[in-house]
Amino acid sequence: MSKKVLVFAETKDGKLRNISFEAITVGQGLSEGGEVIVSLFGPEASQYVQEVSEYGANKVYLLEDESLSTFTTDAYTQALCQLIEEVQADVILMGHTAIGKDVAPRAAARLGLGLASDCTGAELENGNIIFTRPIYAGKAFQKKVFNKGKVFATLRPNNFDIQKNPNESEVVSFQPVIKDIRTIVKEIVRKTAGGVDLSEAKVIISGGRGVKNKDGFKPLQELAEVLGGAVGASRGACDADYCDYSLQIGQTGKVVTPDLYIACGISGAIQHLAGMSNSKVIVAINKDPEAPIFQVADYGIVGDLFEVVPLLTEEFKKA
Ligand code: FAD
Image (cartoon, rainbow, N blue to C red; front, side, top):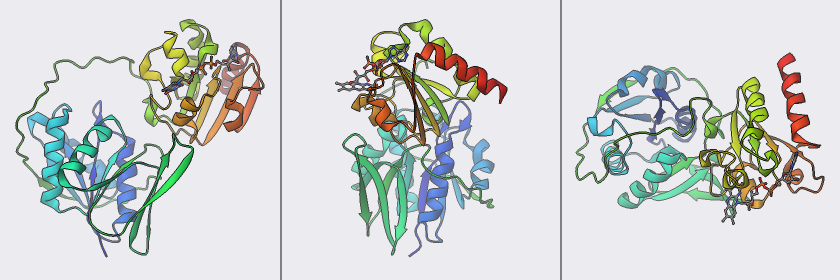
C-alpha cells in the first residue's frame, strides 16, 4: 500500500544538511510509490526548494514563520506536529541530529506515535517497515517491525545512500499556529570555527589522551586538512582539556559513521567505541599493541602517533 512519507529537511549555516538527502532517498524506498513530502522551516525556506526537488521530493511544504528562523524546541515541535496532522503522513523521517533528538520524541509523544530512533537501516518487507537500530551502546542491533499505523523515525547521519531523482515538486505554503514559546535564542556561540561538520564528515582523525596536550592535535589537524576531514576526540582528551567537548565522540558525545576513522592515541574504551565502531574503515595508531582499539580496527599501526601521523600526511599530500 502506498504511503505518504514526510521528511524534515534540516539546514545548517545556509545549507541543507546531507542527512536531508539521505532521508529523502530512504523515504522514496519506503513510500511504495506514494508521496515524499519535504518540509522546510524558516523564512529562508524557499531557497532550498530546487535542491530537495532534485533529490526526489514530490511536494515541498514551506513553513516560513519568523518564529522558525532559529531552532527552538517549542516552535519546531508545535510546527512539526501540526504539519504531520495537516499532510496525514504515514511515515515521518528526521535526522538523528541535535534537532532530531530533541524534537522527534516530543512530537511522537504528543501525537501518540511510536518512535524508532537512531536508525542505521530502513527497509520494506511484505508491506512492513523494518528499521534497524543499535542497542547496548552499539554492541547489538535490533530490528523494529512496523506493520500498521503511523511511524516516526530518526536516521543516523552518513548511513544511507543518496540518490538523485529530479522531480517537479508542488510547493505548498503552510502557516502553523505557534504560541507559548518558552525560550528565546539571543546569541549563537560557535565553539569550532568553520571546517567540516563532525557528524557528517567522511573522514575523521581523532585524538585521545595519547596526543599529550593541545599542541598534540596539530599533526592531526594537518592530516585532516589534507584528507578534507574533521578532527574528533576521545573523552579522555576532552577531560584533559586538550580540546573542546564539541569534538567528543562516543556514548556521551557524537555518534559518527565516516568512511574513514583514524584513531590516534585512543585506547578504545567501550564508551568511545559506541560512537565510532560503525565507521566503514577504522585505522588505529597506538604505541600499545594490546590496546583494545585494535580489536575493532581494520588496519592497526603500532607506533608513536607523532611519527606516524606526519608520515601519513606527507604520503597523502603526494597522492
Ligand atoms: P586512554 O585510555 O588513557 O588511552 C590513551 C592511549 O594512547 C593509550 O592506549 C596509549 O597506549 C596511547 N598512547 C599514548 N601515547 C601515545 C603515542 N605517542 N602514540 C600512540 N599512542 C599513544 N570516552 C569517550 O571517548 N567518549 C565518550 O562518549 C565517553 N563516554 C563515557 C561515559 C561514561 C558514563 C563513562 C564512565 C566514561 C566515558 N568515556 C567516554 C571515557 C572512557 O571510559 C575512557 O576513559 C576514554 O575513552 C579514554 O580516552 P583515551 O582513549 O583518549 O585515553
